[in-house]
Amino acid sequence: MAGTVTMYSTTWCGYCRRLKSQMDREGIAYNEVNIEHDPESAAFVEKANGGNQTVPTLLIVSPAGTESVMTNPSLAQVKQALVAFTGYTLEQDKIDRLVAAGGTGASTRWASI
Image (cartoon, rainbow, N blue to C red; front, side, top):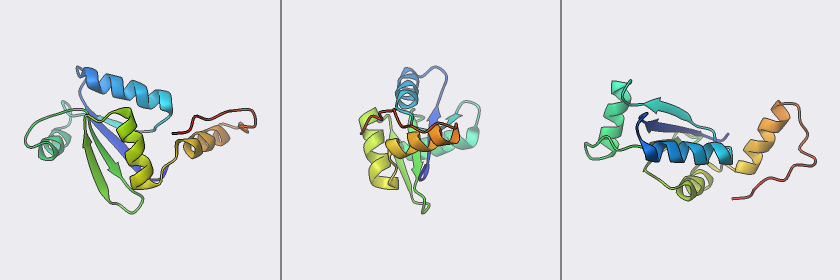
């Protein structure tokens, strides 16, 4: 993947569960950090959200190291940011995963974004 995605969440957040499920379904890779177990991450979320611990908060880091923060984004907003900000394409990521798993993808159709 070009760049990285980190999702700051909590176990009780329904919006977090929904977005994780949608991103999993779409094959969007991310690292999840539970802010209830990581004070440094909680402080990051507070700083990004005017002192509030609003989740989900996503941190997208481009290959060049530039950061973008999104608070409670929709799946469409996440896809748009990944394409615009990192050059990430879901199709290429799925192909890379398939090849790494030993498949060819010859008969696989990938959803475009």
